[in-house]
Image (cartoon, rainbow, N blue to C red):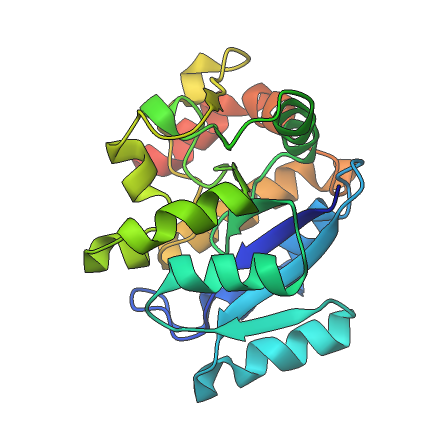
Length: 235
């Protein structure tokens, strides 16, 4: 069984152009994400999936320098890009990670991959009810299952938001949701990178947890929960 982790990103983001290559502690956001994904212990392959548009040439070049494959597909139909990448690399299961998910927890990815494969699930997610902070979203899809439902995506919003159709059609597929019981106080907190203020907060969090290298996850973020909430409220 082949497991893939697909990082979906583009360079020309609307609210924070070039955010995927913005630097925190001298390293790009994309590099930080890839470093964290390399901490996943389950057998897997990591691929960055960006668009075929000219501005995303720089992402492909960055992937080349990092030594990671870069798949290029449709700019606006992100759902099709995700599926075509999964098929191109012959993934049986594909883990979806967004390019603004700087704080994705490798240990949680391992747990969810194990559940998806051992339980033969079609869809695994930690997104429902947003019990985890934004910026820690993980979704796992069985490629064959996703291929059967993609033709139903008849609205533009389904093309842009890879799994929205599934959340609106709960009857489809064998699925399981993961909920944050470790640190309820971080429920719904925004750790995603969407603007300069988010970038500033991420810089401060990394400075606080730099002694842990890339090993920190939800438990370590919980330990500085009050600091995170205070910093966000102060901005």
